[in-house]
Image (cartoon, rainbow, N blue to C red):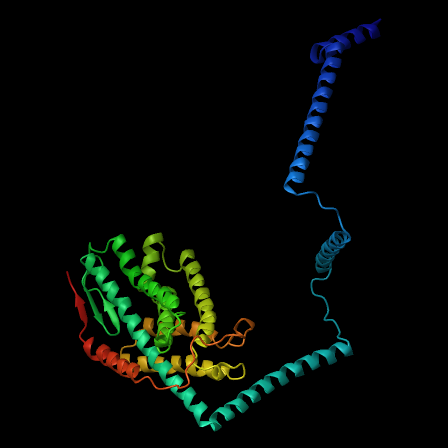
Length: 412
């Protein structure tokens, strides 16, 4: 009797909370119908995607033997990685593996081959140098080429350096800020806390010179490829000016970050950054890589500017790069340092250092694969000393040293 009463109570409770048996069956049937409808819709969508893939020509690719091999390789690599991690935790400091006799012999042979290759390269360098020195005409060509390139290096630096500071002075004058340009520095004879030093003034004034230098560099690189006889003597001048223009933009940022002068004020007042913030470090790294890439690209341009095919043969390119790029950079930098003495501020010396980043790249890829078939843009039988550029260099040096000794002032 009690058991029957308990079953009735239990049944009534179930009917109260879960509904009657008929309702439960109806609910189960409805849920089953929903699941079947969802499955049918999923299959229909899948079929639609397959039809779309067939229309677009994106049929599912069959698994080939190559795919199976790749899958096995990936599984083996994962297993090797797991084993390496497990071995590391078991034995963090493994014992040094004993080398086999064959391995020792092979390593020694590889080392000897590398040493022999370097020795042969050095020997070949001095043999070819001896051939050049014995031939008076070829030795004279390299000497004259080095002198011309040195003169053009100095002339291009003085031109770009003057334009850099002159546009800065004009921009400052537009903001009623007086300037004074001496041959070794540009000064602003007003108080640091003057009301004239607004944020737009600081950004625009210190960005004007680098931007003009970069524009000059891009324009000259475009003019470099003009095929004309009158361009043969101007091509190296344009190339050196382009490199100085790139250096006055990207190198100026690195120099400014080190010395806290010049171009660095632009980024400081744009981003309100302080010394060596993340923005400055990122921009400095970008500038460094641009200088490296520009130097590697400049190698091809120096080879194109040669007036003789014999000078840029693969066996003689090292001497060409030394005579056309490296020695002119070194000698020209010494001439500029002597000209600016006794005033050689750190930021000018650092400009030579950033220029060296570009110049050094020419020694690394002059015989690279993409420079193998470089031919000169214009050929000339004679290599003569360019007296006009030599006189221009002397005039510019005297004008810088004497004419800008007391300073050039622009006031509004």
